[in-house]
Amino acid sequence: MKPYQKEFADFDNGEAFDKILAAIEAHGFKDCSWHNDAMPCIISELDHGFQQVIWVDYKDLTKSEFPEQRLIGWDSVGRMKQFMFGERDADGEYTEEWNYDDIDLLISHVLKVMTS
Image (cartoon, rainbow, N blue to C red; front, side, top):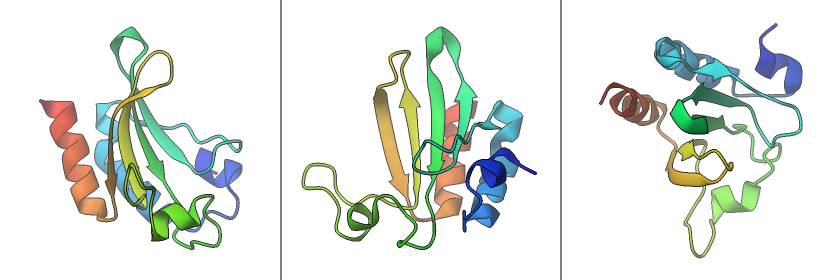
């Protein structure tokens, strides 16, 4: 059983999670899902405590911890999407963050960042 399946037994977006991980795991990404988080995640550890983090939300908005943000968004940030890719510093703060609904655009962006 994969970590995200163990930590999120009701997760309904496993196909997307598996597709993302398969495309990027050669760049050091691992399933780091933990049940106390809002959704499963994939992480690559970088130098100086930095991480590249991908969050994969539930497809079903009724299972998401952020249904309103996915539907209407935040005033200052905009609408949250199904996939989030970001860089987190050693203090756990995001220094950059991108949101996607298109899985192929997400994967392309991650691969571009990791190979540049």
